[in-house]
Amino acid sequence: MPDLFAASPAQIAPYLEELRQKDALGIPLLSEPGRQRLLEAAQALTYRRAKPYMGAPGREVQQDFEICMAFDSGSAFMELAKQLGDHLRAAASSMSEPPLTNELRFNDIAVQRYTPGSAGITPHRDFLQFRQVVVLIILAGQGRFFTCDNREGLNPLEVPAKPGDALLMQAPGFGGQARQPFHFLRDITEQRVIVGLRYDAKKAS
Figure 1 (cartoon, rainbow, N blue to C red):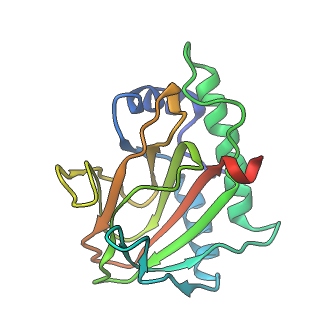
Figure 2: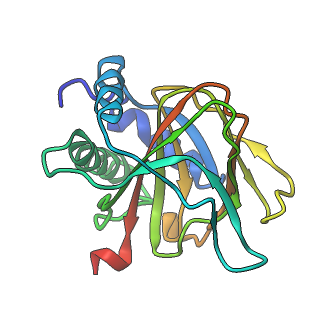
């Protein structure tokens, strides 16, 4: 997949350092040809509606999007997962105190599609088995992503990201820390397409 990334590992390393002090941040990642190719691949996928509510009573998460998690071995998203893992490990290895380990492999991939006016997703945390770093790549659309303190959305902090950017979010094991941030998405004004890449330690074992 030529010209996928606009940012080199050396350019990503300072963002990894900055992430030590934050729950999440947005970074420029994709080249425009890379974004367009991934967006075209996303438009060709078959989606299903996500369950409108997830979680135990009293801890429900409302979610309003379509999702695809099934990809052929030659899929652009399988290649993206491999290349991005290589890219981030290279970035981390150039740092005096690498926050990521060589175990990092993106083995959980999801493409999500939100329609204009979607309710998005309410405050939640990712599963505990997702480790080191969560990457959400924005392929298209507008929406507002926030981190917060709890399921009630206390102290929301918006993390800006535009199409072509990636949201990097801490997960347990990043830099030896155990952060598992609450986060949510709202105010979808244009169709928003996101690729989520995660390292599932349970699946890896």
